[in-house]
Image: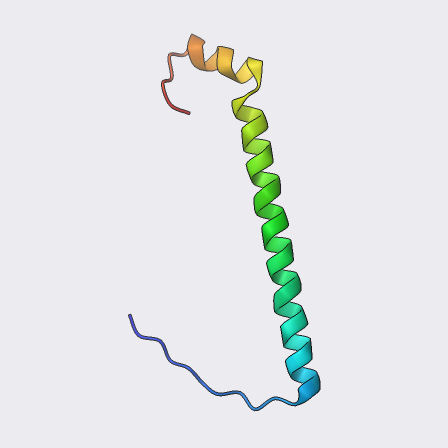
Length: 61
C-alpha cells in the first residue's frame, strides 16, 4: 500500500483551527468508544442476557 502526502500551505489561524478540530474529533471518538465498551460490559454482566445464553447453549457471545 502506498501513501501520497501533499504539503499544505496554511496560515497560523488555519493551523490552529485544524489542530483544534482534530483534537475535538479525537475526544469525541474516545468518548464514543468508552460509551460502547461500557454498554457492552453492562450487556455481558446482565443476568437476563446470561440466562438466555445458558438457555440457548451459546458458549461465546
